[in-house]
Image (cartoon, rainbow, N blue to C red; front, side, top):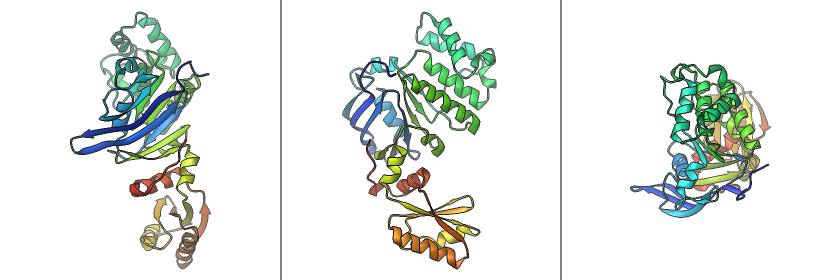
Length: 315
């Protein structure tokens, strides 16, 4: 059950931010519900990190307004910071301190009077950290460093987690375990806004938003975003797919070609023309061709390549 409070953990409207002549965040509006895991996707330099910092009061917008956990993002940024956990891709830990000592240091920063109890509870609750409590942080694997970072973010019991590409460089097993932790936190009513480049992680979010060049191009559930683009996809299986990719580019009906292992995904919005092009190309090379469900990665590649033409789903 969600804790009492406003229905949205984040509720911002028409946020704008410039750095010099560059319009980094352009009229971004976003709502994240209580207890929701919201995925924030986009290429490098798209404005994800700046948007996150605006939403939690770490940066002041040039224009726009909104609330985070019911607090005004401009006037009440200090209150927001006390109730938000912010985990960056490069979490700052102290290599020559143990896990327990790192957590104790963070608890001191928050001036927590019961810090020893809080640290012990964190060691117990997050992914078996207690077994490694006395190990130097600098000797930890990427997955265990990630667990340490999450534990540090959760020490002051925040109502909202802002995670900026938290699993970059972490192996698939550790990423899976991390996401199980996130879903456990969401079940307790904690909201999560997470930026990621991984499509398997995006599909584990309750809702998603895609940003490019500072503009939100689509938002909604994964199903809503896929349906909003009206893309049909055919798969062509066989050899010499790179050669076939060049052949299909510019063909009427073909908006996109992407190689996925032994299959070439051919997508387009003119369904009849796409089918004809895919079948003709496959017949000429004696390849197998069949329609498939358009995937989230197909859609995001399509949006990334055509940022000016998108009209995304809305929650």
